[in-house]
Image (cartoon, rainbow, N blue to C red; front, top):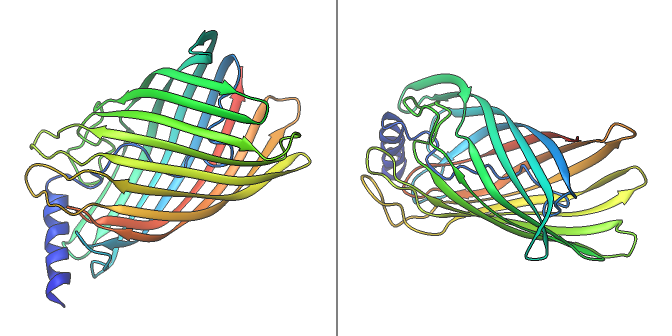
Length: 296
């Protein structure tokens, strides 16, 4: 085993022993795709995101090289999101608020340090008191702000909690290339300011960009989607380095409305094609998402 691989394996063991099985930001990329920056009109909406993320490799800290051995991790989560667009205006936009309550199951096996763990539970909750949606003849825009809490347990490698709070800012645009709105392009950015864990470690700030390019085909839509995620500032505290994590993914999405039910069904699959570790190992894997949107 090369010296760099030994160093990566040692870093993985220390990382997991400290309970840092997922110490980047709270937001999971890939939950939004086609027309991801379009906010609905006044009303109450439930959005359920069923996500399965399978790791196929772990990138060593500060590197794009894999940590050797059989290192697997599967996360299955149902993110329950409720959005209330109040019917009031603020800065010329429709004003609303939202909350997200994730329920998840995580199973991991990292043979290199000899660690295996499985946990289920409610994850950290998001409270979003500000959602603004603008609508033009051929465009939509969104801005939002909120806080990820640290309510969930982070005591074990597969625990559902992060162990720190995060402030998240959101902004994005959807543009329709024709008057009938059959062809669209969207970009949605999330920026997280991460807090400090009990042990003194503070993950760096994180930028996530999700995009989609789609076309309507009668009753359904389909298109290409993807995401990029970058660590934009250095980690701080015990074990921190100047290395910054990043990852990139491409995929496809299909959207189908259920006639007369006020329901939209969405399905998407993503493959991460590039990843690099920061102070800690960085995962690379495959994400599959099924979404349900219901208007009340």
